[in-house]
Image (cartoon, rainbow, N blue to C red; front, side, top):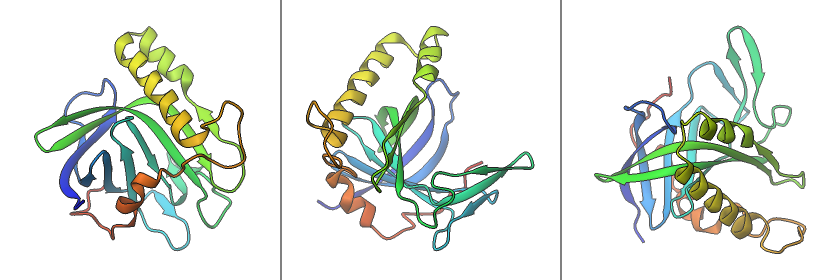
Length: 196
């Protein structure tokens, strides 16, 4: 299948419109890739630059990135990135999304749940369940959206991290094989847009 060019906008669920974008993207079936550049305060790891490619499983509303920055300068402080002490990134950062398709593009809204998936034998690290609970409690995320997201999140975990009831050594299908084609496309995917 030949990937089609699409525009992508991103933000958190409940963020006011307009979201960050449009960002250059490619869609192939239920898979999507898009890119943006990190601002100068992010210091990349050796052999990496600030261009961040994000891969999305549209049917599950899951996005993942292999962050390549060592640290960021935020308010004069040095904030370490994922795998900050390693020269290469071995960990994927995975987010749950609410996906809306319209006019040849996609609006991707973060639904708080995250998991860090190391590829070097370390355990996965689940994050931000309390943020989703707080957002639902405050009325920022409707209950129906949260319930749908949690069901899709479990489907992702079952399909791509552990298919069996008992955890096995290694991941079932991670990174998801369906994303390999888009991950391999040479970048940049289009005009580079820098995050604020």
